[in-house]
Length: 392
Ligand SMILES: [Mg+2]
Image (cartoon, rainbow, N blue to C red; front, side, top):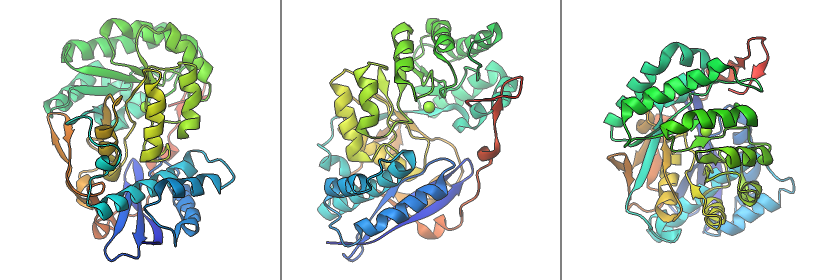
């Protein structure tokens, strides 16, 4: 069997463009799908996929590790998130091909199922409200509670929220009071049985990140995510040592090499690789195995398209230190119209599928109805009172 073509299909889903990767073979009707979506870098990722294609055409698609090595090492230049997202989407498509070729779900090829279902959580408001601080402030605590209740009514037992405002190097008293007020309202409104994760989007410096962790601690957040930006692992470790609540990070890290320092410095309790960025399914399995040796759990990041959901399902089903999976509940109403799939949910969990491969096919005719568009988020900035740009 040989690879004959590597291409991508871009679908605009308002807040982000989904990049679906198709790897075709010389076997009649046998191809694979993966996802390489990367917010606001769509054209760069599509270009990287096109750059990798000549390295793959003519190769045996079942030699997944071999082809990963070829893309990673023969590129000479080590790649950041753009190149690794392209590799991730291609790699997922190779697993889809292998699963279809063997008539086996991908999770059976990744060591087999270690659990019977996969616990999910979702962002309140699909991330859009919480991404814009002014909107968030205007919404007030009660709107967070209303959104969370809607999510819980759909069966979820865990939600994630951005409630710490973008800050300058130190917090004001009002920043802390705002975050505490939203968290208290959520805990009071949802009770003790719903887990509440707080994503900080890397908005803070260590001093104010630690202060937020202490302020939120009485309301028992499940974890606090990216309390500081990802570039400085020592700063993350400082927060982790001082924080009374568990710390999660890793959505912006790629490859096992990117996660090595985080684990060695014990900078978090939970890692959050994104299977569409970190290098794909097999790389994520390696990262998870490294984490397992440090008693660190895995809660994969995934606000992306439906093919990413399918890949995440097979990872979660086969990974022992998996904790919980991010799921995109609401981005566009036609989300599931652009794919044919066998994914089922029940009481806030994904259920296993017996379909071969990843169990999902992109409907290319439907996908073509939503061509690439420049995302509105691209032009938004979060600013301090003096006009300086802040992390959003
Ligand atoms: Mg995050």
